[in-house]
Amino acid sequence: MRKKIVVGNWKMNNTIAESIELATEIAEKVGTGIICCEVGIAPTFLALHEVGKVIEWSDIRLSAQNCHYENDGAFTGEVSARMLQSAGCSYVILGHSERRQFFGESSAIVNRKVKKALAEGLKVILCVGETLQEREAGITESVITGQVVEGLDGVSDISNVVIAYEPVWAIGTGKTATSAQAEEVHASIRATVAGLYDATAADHLRIQYGGSVKPSNAVELFSMPNIDGGLIGGASLNAEDFMAIIKAAC
Ligand code: PEP
Image (tube, rainbow, N blue to C red; front, side, top):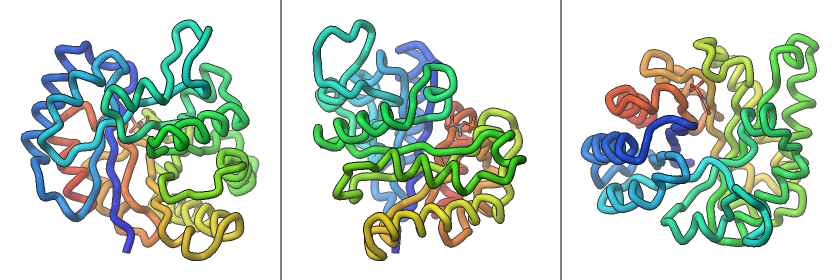
């Protein structure tokens, strides 16, 4: 039985003080002893260390939203996986469509990041997703398969990997994939992973759905057999909504 995982991606929102306030509110709601689902929050880099201290007593895991593929060196403005470890992160989100779209991250770059983050002991949330044009052209499955295969190239052990399926057309748009649309892609990702690794690895792999998940649609999405929780953007900025989504996973 896979344990569901719900992670809040705060994106470029909240100052350090605001992040601490929101994290405190969420930690009070989540507390300890949540056994039905793993919970994480991904604040801005700047707030990671402070937020880590605020949530330390709770079951919430600290996640970053990105990292570089080298540990140190002349990479102005970048943050490494080793630095994230030292800030208290357990997870890092990699290959988010906003990174791919706005910052030119190819699957090859995402793959280098995945390998470095895993080598540094971080767990990885590898994001994949098709654009609206790709869906309309009927190539969703091949696009997603390509992103999964390239993202995991050279990764021998996927026990510390979570895949997040996030259709680009559903992120921050208020349009959610139907549970049937999402389930179809999740099942195909699991089949791809079974082919790349084996049936056991595929069965253990958690695949989150992301794209306008809200308290009102979370129960239905999370009840699908291959949907193991969610990567939550907008709704994770409100502690009550985020908590309602966590409860939907239980
Ligand atoms: C995301 O950024 O990962 C996301 C799913 O955003 P939203 O929930 O706002 O669509």
